[in-house]
Structure formats: C-alpha cells, structure tokens
Length: 372
Image (cartoon, rainbow, N blue to C red; front, side):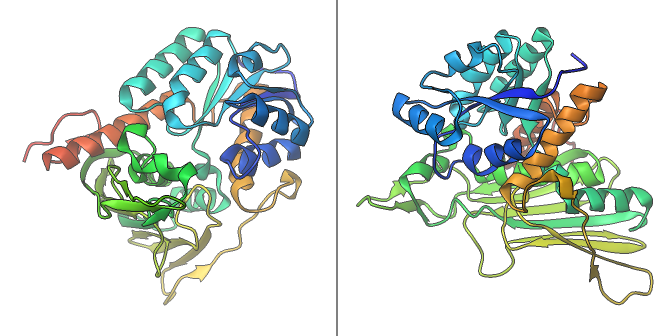
C-alpha cells in the first residue's frame, strides 16, 4: 500500500481514561492533526470502554476485536502492555489493517520476528512507536553530524534515568519489575535511547553489556509486602558503531539527584550535547548545545518546531511528529517512519545485549560472539 485517502480513521486499543500513554500522547496528537480522525477506542473492560467513549466522543468497545472489525478504522493503534501485543497485533494484521504498535513490538525476539513475518505476508504498512527519533533536538543533531559539524566521530556517551524502576512504585506499574513481562529498563528506556543513537550516528556492529538488579525489592503503594524485582535496573552497554567509534550507554532505574539525561557526541572538529530534566529520551524535552573550532564551550541551539503541529512540548509532540510523517509516507509512497522490520532489528540488538550480559563476551548484533 503506497497511498491512502485522508483523513485516516484510527482506532486505539488501550485508550483507558486516566494517565495511560494512549491518553497522554496518542489522543492529543491525533486530535491536533487534520490528517487523522479518531473513530473508536477499545479497553479490556466494558466499563472503561464506556468511560473512554463518553470522554472522547467515539464508540468504545470492551473487546479489541470489535474495534478491528469496524470498516471506518483504517489504522489500529496498539497501546497496551507488552505481553498482549502479539495477540492484538496479529489479529489486526490478519484483518488487513494498518498497524501502529508501541515499542517493544513483542515480548522478546521470537514474538517480534513472528509479527514482522506476519506483517510482510499481509502486505500492510506497519509502524512501531520509536518516536524519539522525531524529536526536534534529535533531528537537528542528526543533520549536524551529517553536515560534518563534529568532524570525524571520536566517541559518544549517553547516560539516562528510567524514572520508573526505582525503589517505589504504584500497583499499576508493578508489572514493570518482572522481567518476564518484557517492559524493562533495557527494553524500554535503553532501547529508545539506542534507537536515537543509531538514527544520529549509524548502526551498531557489536555490543558488550552488563545488566544487574540493584534494588532487589520495590515498595508498592498500598501494599504491606515489597515486590521482588527480576527486571534489571542497571543497564551498562558498550556498543561499537559500524564506523568503528566506541560508545557508552548507561541507564539506571529510578531518578537521579544529578543529571537524568545527558548525551555527548564528540568529534575531531566539534561537540554536541543533548540534555533533559527527564531521563527517558522519547518523552523528554531535549535541549541541544553545540560547539566547534576555537569556541571554548558549547552553546544552546534554538530548535524549530512546526507551529502547525498543534501540540505543546511533552509526550504528544514526538508522537504527533511521527503521525505526521506516517501520513506523508502513505500519501507519497515513502517509507520514513520505523516499521516492524526496524523493530525486529532493534529486538536483535536487545537480544545481543542480553547475550553479552549472560556470557561476559562482546557479541555482534547478528548474534555471533566476537573473537578475543
């Protein structure tokens, strides 16, 4: 499919009223863009579906399959917990719908590979929610690197905080601390950061990594007993870029009293520094500073945001930028937004990181160990 009639009818699976990602980011992004029309929402319960329907003024369904069956729903957005992705995405693909799945695509590499294969067989366009690469600071950094602003890349260092995965949590987020659920500091925060790193600096050839559980238990609000933690809350990765330059990436669970996000890109001619108060790159309001030549320090750069986008900074902005590019892709037959094939490549990278952490050896992204 290369072209699509606008507006594109959207149905969101997982749009429960409250503070969920669909409500915080997808709904305001879609409401601001004339290229889209929100047509339906679905949740796991009839009561929450009715509440979402009343709030948003569209039909609500307590069964996601009813939403997928609606003829005016062209694009199915899957914004639910990772263990439910495979079933819902598979059903939408089988119905021939466009599918936007939140990242991670699947609960592990095997599920992601299966969904990518199903999407290719169905011949439909897909999207994965790696929206951080569309942030104005990331796009500007990518352009500067491509223009040769930093010269030859020497190295890059990124440190971030997961914000979640700290010492305390609420019942609705307790599932994040179980590695079996596939939504960890590695698979979420670190992989969103790695997507931006690859987008700006090019692919990763191999990785060495350590994953650890620093906090063995987490206090859950309203519960007397702490929860045992199995998901890593300390992620230390040494990627080697395909161009040969070394990289360092450290993501820690919870928040820091220091800098929650800082990414430096250092080259023979100049330096770029991206910072934010929030530790998750994909949702943070990123600042970009740059300096080169005889300049003694970096200076903050102004970042242009299209005033017609219609959303303020924060969670909706990058999602809206991704949606706008998707509409352009469908209209013009281009393929800019990340799809399930891109998601599979990132799942392979995450798998290589996990293999390195288990073995203590450097691992190529194709899965082979690197000879000493």
